[in-house]
Amino acid sequence: MTRDVVIVGGGTGGAVLANDLADRFASEIDAGDVRVTLVNDSDDHVYKPVWLYVPFGKREPSDGRRPLRDLVDSRVDVVIDRVTDIDTDAQRLTYRDGSGPGRYDKLVLATGSRLAPEEIPGLVEGGHDYYTEEGALALQEELLSFTEGHLVLSVIGSPHMCPAAPLEFVFMADDWFRKRGLREDIDITYTYPIQRVHGNPHIAEWAAPLMEERDINVETFFNAEEIDAENGVMTSMEGGELDYDLLVTIPPHRGIDLVEEAGLGDRGWVEVDKGTLEAVHADNVYAIGDTADTGVPKAGSVAHYQAGVVAQRIASELRDRPATEVYHGKTVCFIETGMDAASYVEFDYENPPTPPAPSKKLHWAKLAYNESYWLTARGLL
Amino acid sequence: MSETQAEKTVDSRGAACPGPLMDLVGAIREVDSGTVVALLSDNDQSLVDVPEWAAESGNEVVGTEEAEDHYRILVRKA
Image (cartoon, rainbow over all chains, first blue to last red; front, side, top):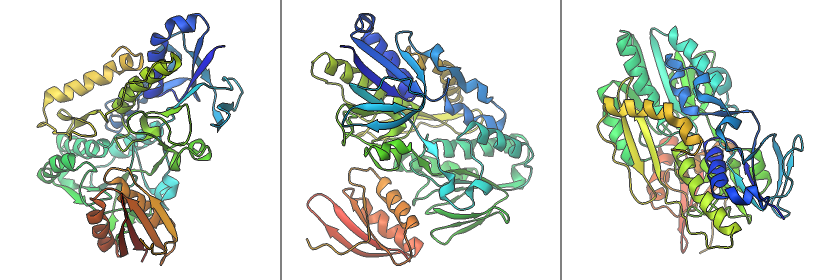
C-alpha cells in the first residue's frame, strides 16, 4: 500500500521539504510505495523578504514570485487546494475542492503566518506594513511622497515574521532619506513591546547604539493599544502616546485557524518538541517554519534547516529505522543597516548571535542570496 | 503550594524570552479591568520582565508562586 506524506503549505519550508523527500524517496515514489503531496492554496511560491525592498523602490513584488510547480521536483504531487479540516485521530484531511489525498501516514504543517491587524482597534485604517505585497506597494506610494514629518515604525506583534525586518526598515529609511537630503525634516521613531529594541538581547545590544548614532528615537515597553487614524495618534497599554504622520507597523501575527481547531496549539502555532519538531498533541504530525512553536525566529532559514531535519526523520520512520536528526535551533539572517551596508547573525538554542560591524560586502551577500534564493526553494542550496 | 485564584491562565512554559511576557501582554489585552491573569513560566527572566512591565503599564503583580519546575506570576489588570 502506498504510504502518503502530505505537506501543507508551499512556502520555503514546504518547498524545501518536498524536494528533499523527492530526492530521498526517489525509488520508492517511482515504485508507487510512497507518495509525497504538497498542498498549497495558490499557484505561486512567494519569497517574502523581497517586500522589504519594495517600499524603497528597489524591488517589485513580482521579483519574489515563481510558480510553485516550477520549483518542485516532478515526483511530488502538487495540489492547489485548501485544507479545511485536520482529523489527527483518523489521520485524515478534508479539502475545499477535495483534490488531495484523504488519509496521511505523515503530515507536515508548513502553513506559515498571517497578519491579524484587526486585533488592534484602528490599525487596519491607520497603519501601513511591508509584510504583504499589497501593504508594501501602498507603503511605497506613501514613502515616495513623504518629505517631512514623523515616521513611526511600531512593532506591535511578537512573534512576527523575520525579527530583523523592523530594524532593517528603520535603518534603511534613515539612510534612504539621508541620501535624498530629507532626513533633517523627518523624525523617525521605533517602538518595541519589551524593555529593549529587539527580543534577542545580543541583537538589541548591537542595534541600540546604531539607532542612537542615527538619531532614530526609541520607545520601549510600547504595546499599541489603539490607533486613532483620523488624528494620527497611537496609544500604548503602558500609557504612552505618539503622534505620527506616517505609521508603519508590524501587525499581530497568527497561524491558520485549523491548527487550533485540530487541538495542535494556540493562535495557529503548533506545539512541538523543539528538537524533533513532532507535534506534542498528535502522532505522525510535524510542524516546520513559522508554524512550529519553537521560540526561534519565524524566518526562512529556520524553515529551511527544519525541513532538512524533518525529511530525515520521516524517511527513517517510513523505512523502520531510528530517526536521528535533531533541530538545534539554527538560525541565519542578514540584517540590512542601510541602503548599502548590512550585518549578519547566526545562532542556535545554545549559542547567541554576535553580529559583526556592518559592511558593504555583507549587503552584497544579502542581495546575492536574495537572487539565488530560488536554488534554496529547489533544494539545491 | 496553595494556588491563588486567577480568572485566566497563560501557560508559557518552554517559551524563550520574551515569549512569556508577550503571552501575558496578549492575555491582558483581552481581559476586563480588574481581572487577574496567571502566567506560568519556567524562564527566570520572567521574574524581572513581568514586574518591570507591570510597573510601566500600571498593572499590578499580586503574587509570585514557585512550583517545582516553573513560576506562577499573577497580574491584575488596571
